[in-house]
Structure formats: C-alpha cells, structure tokens
Image 1 (cartoon, rainbow, N blue to C red):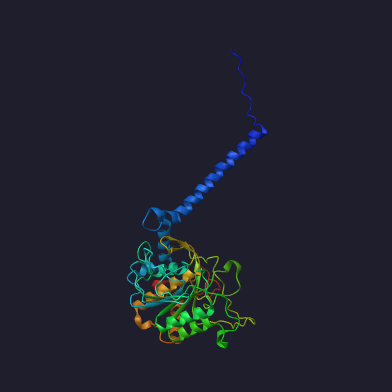
Image 2: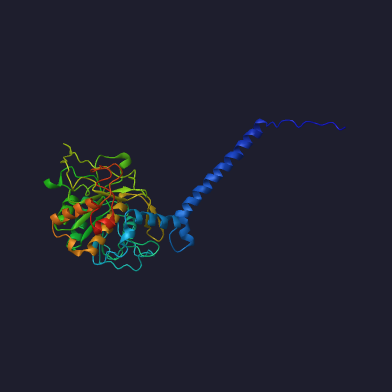
Length: 366
C-alpha cells in the first residue's frame, strides 16, 4: 500500500503575506473606483452617448414634480405670465433652450447686448422654469426676462442686484425670482440700509411677487435666512429632498428678533422661511450643453416661482397690484402648503409647509 503523504497546512512567508494583502487591497480599491465611475457616468457621462439627460436625472424630475404637485396641473404652463430672473445670465445655446425667445435681457456686469452665462448658475435656474427638451420646465410658457447681475465667479454687489431688481420692476413683470442671497444689511432696510432689500420692498409695494432663496448655510448656519429673502414682504424659500424632508443645507430663520444686528420679531405671514420646495439633487441643465443634479435653495426658489406662474395663468385676477395683494397671496400659499408630520405651526426650517401647487391653484387644503 502506498504511503499517504499528508498535505501540510499552507504557510505564507512575510513577503507572501504582504503581497497577498496588496492584491486584496488593490481588488477592493478597483471595485470602489468602478462604482464611483459608474455613478458619475450615470449622472453626467451618459449625456456623451445620448441626446438627453441620464435616467437618474429624469427620474428625479418626476419625483419632484409629484412631490410639489406639478403633475396635477399639467394643463398649465405659465402662459400670459411674466417672470424676471436675476442671476448670472442664460446660455441660449443649450439644447433645451434653443427655441426660447426672451422677453428682454440686460447685462449689469459687462453690458453685453446678447444673452450669455459665464458662470452657469443662471442657466440652471432658467432651465428649471422653461427648459423644453431633455428636461421639461415647470412653467415653460412664461414670458421670461433675464437680468445678469452676478459675475462669472457668481458674485454680485448689493447695488448691482438692487439695480437689477429695479429693472425687473420697470418691465411690469408679475414675479421676480431671486435665486441668490447674502447676509442681511447691518442697517435695516426701514432705516435706509441694504439697497437690494429696498429694491425688493419697492417691487412688492408695486404688487410684484418677489421670491428669494433662504440660503445654503444650514450646515454652518449664521442664524437667519439670506437677504433679500429676509425682507418681510418677500417669499423666502427653503429646500427639501425627494422625500419632503428638510435638506441639510437649508438655512434657518430667526423669527424671535435680536438687538444686534437689529432684527424685529417676525409674525404671520412673514416668518422665515415661508415655504419649502425641492432643493436636494434637483435636475438641471448645464451651460454649454448637458444635464445633471444640483442642490440648493436657489432651485427651491424657482419651483415656487413656477407655482405662482401657474396660479396666475389659471386666474389672472389674482395678479398683484399692491403690497396688500401680495400679502393675500402669501396667505393663500400658506393655507395650501403641507406641514410635515407633527407640525402645527411655523417651523424655523420648514416654514409653514411644503409647496403644493395643485392646492395653491385650486384652493386651500383646509
């Protein structure tokens, strides 16, 4: 009978152990890189191989349309309503904007006669409203006026933004959309401080609905919403995710008042923010061509802008003509919004509730 030779247990020399660990590590790093590449490609890279946005972008568009009830008002597109966007400009060469005709354009940065966007932010915001192609704008029938007041770096002085808001007012628009913001002035507007806040107040006095972003410093909050969203008559908008939960970057409102910088207590219907709307991973068009996702209360602002455009198309008699009519519209918006679970009053992050466009158009939920 042949002798059975036992197979010895495997033993690795130190060098072999090190090589083995390197191979395992390389394998797992490779898996991670493949996953990252796939995720980025699915959001952005797919555009290189197709004529439209990736499925993750269009899927998120549908999610938000449902969340804010735009699905239920498809018969409206904002026709007959004029909107003015103050931002970094607009790229009219984007495939989703090539058929767009602006009602008017002005450039407070370089004075160029033709529309352009050397930053990209304004194009993203305009696309949420009027895109017609890979993405579908929420109110693509509006008459759109665009004022470039932000530079290629995304900066804009208080005076220039004020001039842009004043320009919008002279165009007799129905809505001014301000997807921008900064720290409120140290000298309150009612004492003559902060030109942009004063211009926003003048616009609402003229019956124009002014809608502005709450700000994106929720992770490191300075204690209040951004200006000019801080103006009492302006509708200030916070952001939520696709489930309707507050986006972590959305700014908090200070509604109790403080001694310095001077801030008087805010009351119904002007507690900040007034409302929340989609703001995390929102589908956008990208200047130069392309589509993607972006987060910020800037996007939330445009959702509310679109909702009011649809409201005014549905009932043009609701268009404002003075400050009181704007306040009445605020109450209508508040009454139609949806509070989060266990909420029964204004919340310093969630406002009076989540934008509900169908309820805004057709009457209060209450």
